[in-house]
Length: 128
Image (cartoon, rainbow, N blue to C red; front, top):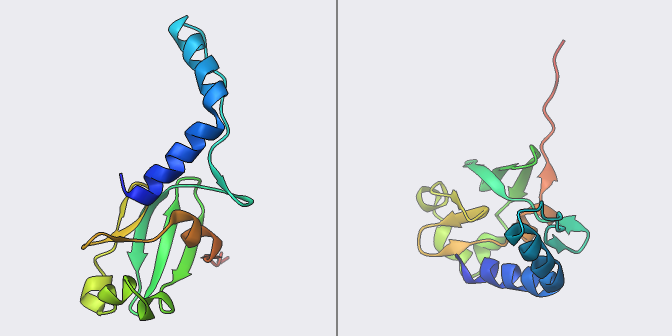
């Protein structure tokens, strides 16, 4: 697991330590555990990216596990490290999804909360 995501999981565990202990006992006893709130960033619930596609103008289209589709503009980030290493179209097009976020070869990724908070919804036109 990438270090950034590992820290997020560890923070979630620390926040919910007591709830996890109670749920563990319930599970050991064969009872249904309680639902624990997912990790949140600010007011945004973190949601895993399940697919990504790139555009020739350095945008990425994201599909989230909740069904939401959003577009993120990578152009501003391509001016700074480490993303400057994927500024060539051939490298940028190699985006994929791992651990619920977008990654590129060479251990380059972007925080899922950044993807969500700085992206815009993709609205598809409905034709009659």
